[in-house]
Image 1: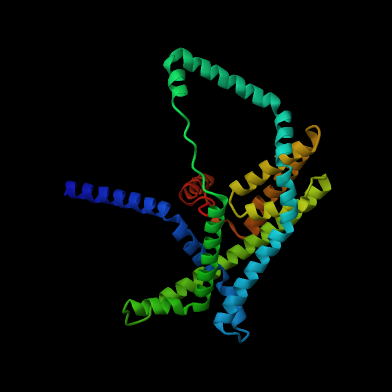
Image 2: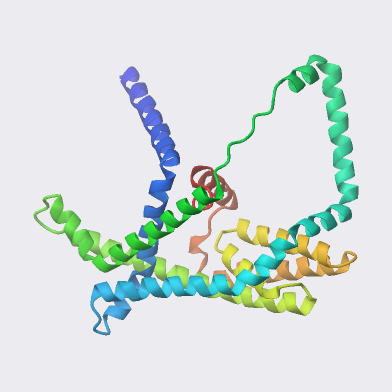
Length: 318
């Protein structure tokens, strides 16, 4: 019995490793489908609302999907020019930042030099071996190939989202019928509807909270004289969907841009402190009031999940 139990445990571990590996390898096929299912669950109440006006379900799904594309397109249009100008100035920005952080980089360089000298003393052959091994050039996909993959993934997600919305709850009925079920599981239908409603309600609330944070960030950055305040407000709005890590990334971006844009440390500290104050109010006061503390998750679990999702599926996994 002990041998049989250990064999079963080993098989479970092997199966888990195979499933994770398969998900990692097939991410280009699986991620668009999962995103489509997520979007369909999120947008199902909106499609049902449009359908209640007398519009057919297929037309209502099309209206919702087109509205989603329009909103995303307006967001890109609003941020394209400031983001492009910021990217064009990125080389000069990096040079300025390097000059301002020269004391820190000099200290890091000294530490690395001491470490290399210690390595040579302990292992004299390490430098020769390291120099003898030719560096392999990393194979990078062309820009056209990457763009094609992104376009295919986006198109797949939108098409599958439309069909899932157009099918609606009847899709579960058809799945049950295809399995040869004699009676439709009404509990499954109620569960799917409850999940969709709760998910939509939650993300609608979070979207309103993030929108408020984005507006407040835009106003604060405009008041402090930061360049392109609208861009940083949209960045704060989008990244705040990622728990903990999103606000931390926005804080780092704002601090770096402030260090480059202003002389001295007064304004950069004011920019960082102002955004830190806003995101603290949002996370510790506004979210618990509007969303509730029943969704609180350990920060360690969140960071481990973000790391695992990033390793598994990249940005979509995060």
